[in-house]
Image (tube, rainbow, N blue to C red; front, top):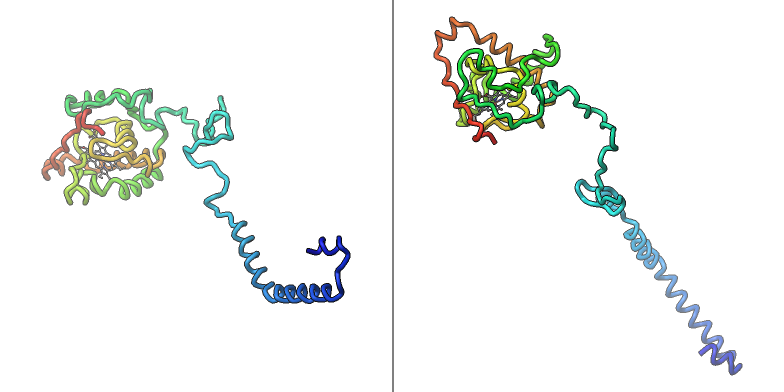
Length: 248
Ligand code: HEC
C-alpha cells in the first residue's frame, strides 16, 4: 500500500497521521507484552541449550562408532604395550597353575588315591606359595576368610557354615585328608573359577587376597589336625566331590 501511494505520490497528511497513530498504538501494545515475549523467548532459548549429561558425546561400552575405521569404540591396546597393572607374566601367582594353559585340565578328586598320590590329582596346580608367607598375610587371610568363606565352609573349615546349616549343599571340609594334601594351586583354582556348587569369587577377591586366604586355610588345617581331637569327635562327612562333568 505504501509503495503504491509513494509511486502515485498522493499520500495525504491525514493518511500519514493516521498511519503514525496506528503504528505507535501497535508499538505500545507490543511494549506492554514485551516482558511476556522476552520470557517466552528466553524459555525457548534455554530449552534449546539444555544438554543433559547422559547425552554428552562419549563412547558407550560395546557400542560401535563411525569415528574409528574398524568401527570399535573401545580401542585395542597398541601392539607391544601392556596396560598398567595388566602384566601378568607371573603365571603361578595369577593362575595358581604351573603352565596356566588349560583351565580344562579337570582334576578328578573323586577317583584319586589316598596319600601323597593325592597331590597328583591336580598335576598343573602349583604346590608352593608364589611368595613368602608372613604373619601379616595370614592375618589378612583370616579376615578375608571369615568374610567370604566361613559362611559356607565354617569358621574352622569343617564345611558347616551357616549357609550350609540352612540348606545349601555341604561345602568341602578343609580338614579332610584329600584337601590337606591338595596343592595350594588347587585352592586358588577353586576360589578363582568356582567348584561344583561353589561360585567363583574372582570378582570379589583380588589375587593377593586369594593367596592370603589360602595361607590362612593352611593355618586352619594345621590347627585342626591334632590326631587326638580328630579321633575324639567324629569328623563331618566328607563333601561329595564334584565330578568334572558336574563343574559349572
Ligand atoms: C556359598 C557357599 C560357599 C562359599 C561362600 C565358599 N564356598 Fe567353597 N565350596 C562350597 C561348596 C558347596 C563346595 C563343594 C562343591 C560341591 O560339592 O559342589 C565348595 C568347595 C570348595 C573347595 C573344594 C574343592 C575340592 O577339591 O573339593 C575349596 C578349596 C573351596 N570351596 C574353597 C573356598 C574358599 C577359599 C572360599 C572363600 C573364598 C569358599 N570356598 C567360599 C561352597 C562355598
